[in-house]
Image (tube, rainbow, N blue to C red):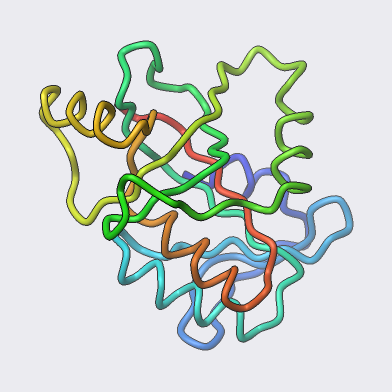
Length: 171
């Protein structure tokens, strides 16, 4: 999930700090950590709580999501403008930092990467069956589903750290 970021990370070093594991280095002269939070809301919340204690200027959460629409194909990129939690699937949701979202949209705007913007729904369990995906899309308005983003945005917002979510569609 992080291979592309690892490829551009300069001065790369192993990161082991406050229970966080990953890589540290620089991207375009900016100190950068690549941290794997683990799967699901609880590991994502705990890892993000540790991250914000280190004083980041921003958090960019990357990973995989499942499409809730047949119009969104595997390999597509999702830049959600809203992330909804399992507790409030119909909203209101959490919002990424508008400046980070605008920058990400501009960065992929001229590329050939298929990109969608919409609502991302965070759930507690994987959603496999097409009828379950269709039902979630209809009841929530979401275009994709993951298991971490709501917790990451919630912790970042509570600590006044700008955050962005980018998800690649796996299925």
